[in-house]
Length: 270
Image (cartoon, rainbow, N blue to C red; front, side):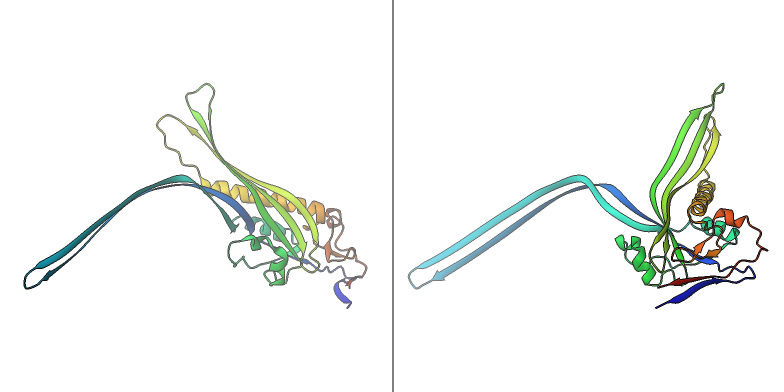
C-alpha cells in the first residue's frame, strides 16, 4: 500500500522530524571476591536393654551404640556476574542540543522496564512494543567505556601537588528509522569532565563529582549532535524527498534563506 508520509508546502513550511533519545544502555562484567569458612560436628547415642525373669532363672540383654561426625569447609575465589541497565543522567543535554537547534522535535520515549538482560539492547523489539511511539527516529546509545582517573602531579617550584580528578565516558550511537528499522547514522562519541585542585600537606580535598558529571554530559551532547549533523543533518531537520524515509536536510541547507519558497515535495513509500 502506498502512503504519503511527508509534504513540504510552497510557502516554505517544513515537516520536522521527530527523534526519541533513548537512555544510554550498558552491559558490565562485575567480579567479586568471596570467602567462606565453616565447621560442624554431630554426635548420636542410642541404647536398648531387655530382661526376662523366670521361676528358676533370669536373663538379660543390653546394647549401646554411639556415632560422631565432624567436618570443616573452607573456600575462596572470584565470582563473575553480568549487570545490565540504563544511565539516565547523560541524555538530557543531548535532547537540549537538538531542541536548541529548533530543527527537530524531541519525543520522550519510555525507559526499559523488563528484566535486566540482553533484551535491553533489542531496539527493534522495543520500537515494536511502542517504547518510542510517535518518533520517526530513535537515537540509541550504548556505553562502551567508563574511565575514572584520580592522579597526582607535583607543582614545579613548590611543595604542593595538583590533584587531577576526571571522568571519560565513551559511547556508540545509532540513529534508527522506526518504520524501516534502517540505521541512518552511526558513530562513537566521548564525554569528558575534570576537577583539578591544588593540594598541600595536611589538606583534605573532595572532588566535585557533580560538576565533573555535568561537564561530561555537556561535552558528550556536543560531540554526539555534531556527528549526527555531519552524517544526517539532524540538527537541520528540514524534511526532504529522497531515499525512502523522512530524512533531514544537510548543514549546508540550513544556511539557505528560509524565506525562499520551497517547491512541493512528496515522500511516497511502499
